[in-house]
Amino acid sequence: MQKVRKAIFPVGGLGTRFLPATKAMPKEMLPVVDKPLIQYAFEEARAAGIEQFIFITGRNKNVLNNHFDHSYELQKLLSEKEKKDLLALTRDWLPEAGQIAFIRQQEALGLGHAVWCARHFIGDEPFAVLLADEMILSPKPFLKEMVEAYGKKKASIVGVAEVAKEKINQYGIIDAEKEQDGLMKIKGMVEKPAPGQAPSNLSIIGRYILEPEIIPYLDKMLHVKSSGGEIQLTDAMAEMVKKKPFYAMKLKGKRYDCGSRKGFLEANIAFALARADMKNDVREMIMEFAAEF
Ligand code: G1P
Image (cartoon, protein in one colour):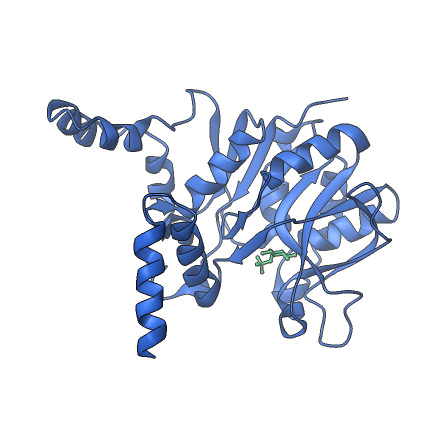
């Protein structure tokens, strides 16, 4: 059984849900508290044991490459001034040389297409997919739990969480059997179902462990423009579910959809409250706001 060593980060999207902030800046560089979304996702993957990080980028995304590189001028200045803590924030978390790769997705054709663009890097190994605009706060690192479950089941797994009825049409929704040993066997899934047509309220939350067999299913989807006119990963997974065991793991924690303005604000507050150095100030600030409005 192969270990999950590779992670794909689709970051080629145009960020239309977050204009004007994302006009010239990739949405994955939006900061939650003081760290860009993409760095949280990268650190989450590394904590789950991932060794190779593959970014699927597009035009106007070069700042993402730069974020994962040295910033010599800044580092020189901080080291001369002996600002050790700040220096650490610029470089101590960087991947090792050779651990990170960037693949150009020339057209933003959808999540399914983005994953397909990584096919030569994926080869015949299982891999993780992380959508950086979904942030997770959970007692146990969720992707790590998914990787461990893959080790036992040797089958693809998607992370899911319950969503409110009115948000069901914004996500991939699964149809699954009852939970057993922390996993639900998936019977089917559908991308952004119309109201009243969803098989459940369990939404896919941007964390996937996929077997390489997904690639031929994506090949078949390349000419199928589905939900939103895009090539959807969910469509390929829905076909694979018919032939291979596929599981869902329910998040025991909170997810913040930073693709929406409200989710982004929530994430900023939640992540600030989770930090020992900010908790008290932020709590006080919220109390003041609550009293005022
Ligand atoms: C994508 C997936 C969807 C999933 C969602 C999670 O949608 O296609 O299945 O539920 O991410 O955030 P997007 O947000 O790119 O429209």
